[in-house]
Length: 138
Image (cartoon, rainbow, N blue to C red; front, side):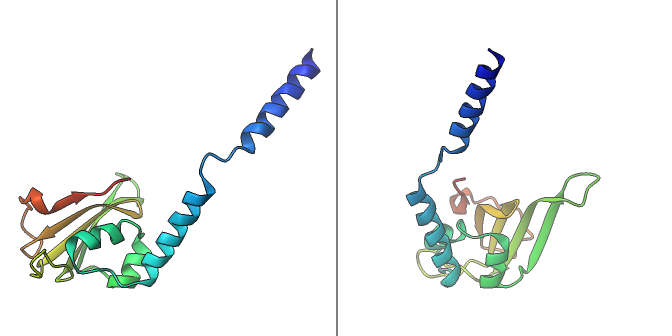
């Protein structure tokens, strides 16, 4: 009886480890989409910028835009581990009329952008315009 249980458990573990829960097509598409976004220049228009920036990590963004004009990191108390960051870039994005926003704020959790804010100031003022604040899908 004990052997039968062990064999059944091993068979169950082997079956579970061989199951792929993600579609290989969607993984390949995501990888190709991410690779193409890294190779191209980020768009200036706000809506297209948002679609492109959510595919990139911090390293890729720095490669595209350079170092941010301002960067604030949020660390866990008593640790040097950075869990979130706020980066500011100046005059990189335009509104639907082609007018440049003075500041684009990128909010990160870990390595991914989770929110983009377009500001008509230098970024030192508190943003009160929720019309130009975008939470990105996870």
